[in-house]
Length: 376
Image 1 (cartoon, helix red, strand yellow):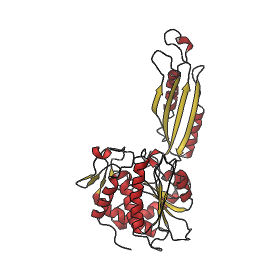
Image 2 (tube, one colour):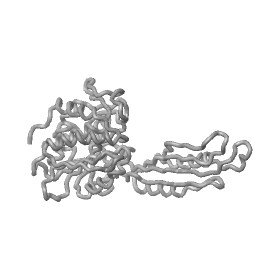
Image 3 (cartoon, rainbow, N blue to C red):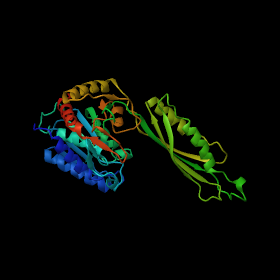
Image 4 (cartoon, rainbow, N blue to C red):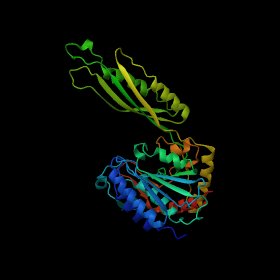
């Protein structure tokens, strides 16, 4: 094994990645980002595979130190190449250094985390460098739900003893994540009956009026004590002001802490009924990401990781359950002990003030090297 990269080298490498904009709605951008990571992984001597997930999605990138013929359950490292920031964000939040902060879109969520994990794995290429084989899977569509990549994530997870996810460390302390809420979406369409708003108002059946009832029923499903939230995120309806609206549609986000709550919310949404006469509801609801439930196995993995963190020079705290979902939800639901939020320390995910803390990079890459090398 060679020495790990210096802080200066880590900063330069992360900056080069941040300058490659890779929003989820730009397959070309994500493809360019994948090419950068692929080149670095190949140069380190890792075995690399690049797989197309279709023209509308960037490619899936896989890198491993797994020796030929080694089929043991290993360590699955998960990351995403896409960001939420559209092309041009670099002009508003340029890649720059101010004091201890490295700014730029995607620096914190999650290019810094990918770079740290890959730098550590690049130091562990030779057979026997790690107790377990390491499979590093980088997906192009996490920010939009991992719809194209979920099957691949679950296929690799089926041969994983542990899951480690490069999502950013939690702000203000750098804690990692052992529990995430499950995430779901409801698409509700209401069909009413059009009529002239002045001459034949009584013959109309307002889809917007009906939707107003449904919005109140949906929002009432929020239960803070149970950890359930339901939010009507977008709504649209009607055609012109002088016609009773015959159509209205909304998209609803919901978050649930466990499968019992998920099944309850799904049942209630599927059983929504029209309040007014002569209107129809078209209900399309799914649980996109199952809950990541804190398990005894995950706690045991956390305790090992905390020991490696102390050896690297920092204390790894456990963050409380977060409402945001990630690909850790999939591996955890399959029974793979999973730690999330192991990426770069910083703040500002999904904002124009996104940054990572330069002073933490050296301890974090050392932590990743210990984690990958010693987990057994």
